[in-house]
Length: 225
Image (cartoon, rainbow, N blue to C red; front, side):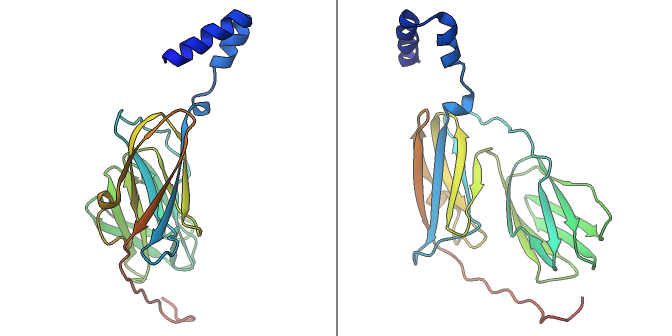
């Protein structure tokens, strides 16, 4: 703050007040930090669908404006996407784009529900109001599985094919950066990294995680359910 005031006074001596104020009336994201995360397994393979999130330690995070179109679809008898990260309090729309009915459910402590789904018949969204992983299944197609990971912070992202994710517009401060994946063999806190972010800083955090082996079988094609 002191450095900003010195800059303000120096510019005030050289420029009209209106121009100086215009320089300082920048959007908040012009001063915010950017965090990029890279996730690999112990064999050096890039990990897709890992949730990278930053929990503020020096201030209480505000609730971001809720996205209106957060969706978990059923396409070709699979959940899409496989992993959906959301902030606590987000309403997720479930839609059936198959000709066959589905019956989604979860018995996870973070959210328990059942939701029959029929093509073309809308249902009320499900609000995820507790943090943690929510495992989704279908009572009709038992190979179907997906994950909704609910975080308390508005600062999160998900890795793509290259194992990288980017979180924008973080206010300066101290954070604990964590990673979660459905196959993570331990708790996110075991891989957490603490860091301090300053204005307009760009920081990269690399994670190496241990993955559990998972096998999932699906019926052979042309078998109707």
